[in-house]
Length: 331
Image (cartoon, rainbow, N blue to C red; front, side, top):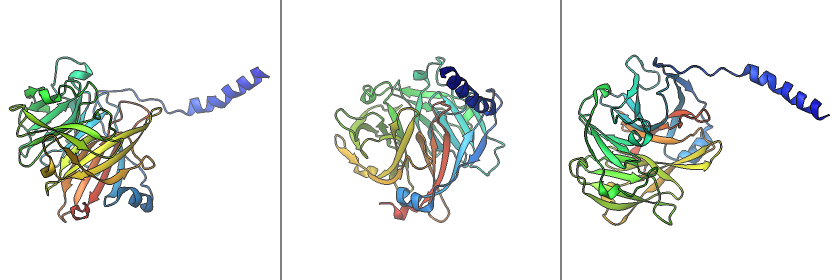
């Protein structure tokens, strides 16, 4: 009887094995696909996203071995999206529906060492001229890239490992960074402060940290259980902060939050409290969201882009959300 049951189980699995789609071979030839993902019902979106309106979701796919694991997102001068990975790679692409003729993928010249700790880009920011600064986890360092609009031509210009970030850990470092319009730089640590599930060490630099690495320490106070993963300044000066929480380890399931705060309220040695404005709940099409970017619209509203880090895992996805929000509806 045991043999019959075992044989029956094997026979039942055979059709599934034969029907499985073959895994495509990885290649160096760049190709990028956008697969639409169905939107949740309007009631579910309104209940979770508050003032944010989710317009479209896509899953990004490519067979190149350098695709995926994106942990930061920038809107380059000219409107191109630039996603940066925690292995030192990048993806340049246009919004879905636009021509992808000039899109591409490549590797940032961060180090001759191929180890993850030498190439682990977790945060990024830029100025109006297109100069990019990168926050590297593991090193707890900040790299400034040479000025230029062509990503393929970027080189490391200056680098610094500030003493104020030295104790941020190997895998809990500068996960969110932004250059403010007044020239200051704000960085948030992914890891929590001791004995807390909502406080995170943070620093603010008076200017370019690669030129003046002296910083003031403060504490980021966000939604309980969530870690900051990216941050961007709105045209009115307020900061949107993307946050993420692992809620189930195998296979990994995530939830997210979006919070808002005024950087004018940052004080050395004090807690900077932000306000939660959206819940990227696990019952929505979410993954490990780590990249956030904002584009002003002609009507005064904002387009908000969010991208996920798939950790190079076949069980996760590179999702791209497109939302809109009216700044007047934000607290």
